[in-house]
Amino acid sequence: MFWVGVAVIVVGLLASIAWHELGHLLPAKKFGVLVTQYMIGFGPSLLSRRRGETEYGLKAIPLGGYIRMVGMFPGEAMLPAATAHRRDPAAVGGWRRRTRSIAAEAREFSAQEVPPGQEHRTFAALSVPRKLVIMAGGPFANLVLAFVLLAVAMIGIGLPATTTTLGTVSACVPAAGASECTDADAPSPAQAAGLEVGDVLVSWNGVAAQDWASVQGAIRDGGTAPADVVVERDGAPVQLTVTPVVAEREVVGQDGTVTTAQIPIVGISPTQVLERASVGDLGSTFVQGVGETFKVVVTLPAQLVGVVSSTFGSAERDPGVVGLIGVGRLAGEATSTPTDFGAAGAALTLLQVLSSLNLALFAFNMIPLLPLDGGHIAGALWEGLRRRVARRRGRPDPGPVDVARLLPLTYVVVVALVAVFVLLTVADIVDPLSLV
Image 1 (spheres, one colour):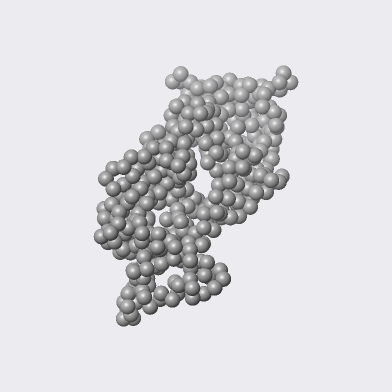
Image 2: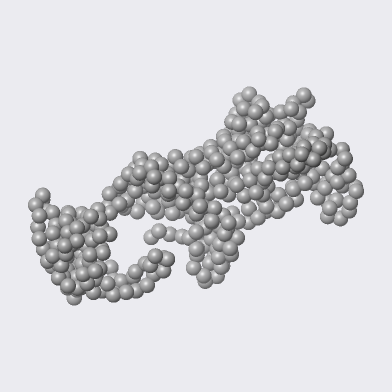
């Protein structure tokens, strides 16, 4: 099952990338943009087929995808002649000349790929709203898919929920840090009182067992005093007396901190079932997931520093940031670990992971930096703002934003993205996260 989980994540990730690019492709074709390529992955092509004016294919490095729209950068003819001196490499020297040369070469290449008579079908010639729809289409396709996957997981399959039916009755109360009973250990209070697996708790010391939390609260409040317990066994009520004992156990606080405390112990645990969530629970969980994902993106630089410290130093790794290898490993472990839910539990885990991956694709692509979708969205918004201001002031149309000028920064972003990928890959190999 380990490799089944890994395979599902790999295929699911490729499908999510394809879906993302489809979110760009469909509106682009709807608006008449000439799209020459729809590719999943980068590098040399493994499979490709031309249909109409677009080549569809799969490339060797499955780390993303793209659609190729002609005229992504406005040609010189589309830009105001009055500002031509600001784009002329010969007008400046040093690094400014180099950056202007890069932008000029990009504009020239972009213009050359436009077939004669097809200038109106370039991306740069689109209105601002249409540019926004095309560039936001990919990330929002992932957002929709993330919601659908989560809905199938939470409503179609259900989430683990504890019941008041006993799933285990411990033979003893092991000492702190021990996992198995020894001959020296006394029987657990539950076993000594005669509790059995399958008993349904009705009340604990007079407190109705509405859910497992109420049972835990009654045990905690009662301390080590004998407790009158009523269970339902084979359809009939059975009354027992249970005397908890105090043992040292780890306790997780509301802030996530783990402390050691002396607490009353009985030696029982509940069964779990898959309980379908409500639409309201689905909505709140999804909104929370979106917020947490953006939080990870915003704090990514600081978390990457922590990854460096844990990978090349002695610090403990933060599980908040994980690479593709780590995601595959965790998914494989989750699906191969035995649970009470069998295949349904494995499917639930994989759906949740794929939903989280699509949320990550959405949030990450909304970063307002080229070559990410958010960078193109920011450029279109800036173009719209400039044109609106020009109209209100009675000035000439400034034309489309010359995003080619940002190419030097784009190259820096690409190098940074590659560095992040390499770092997380090394971390997943050298200091892997594990569920076991």
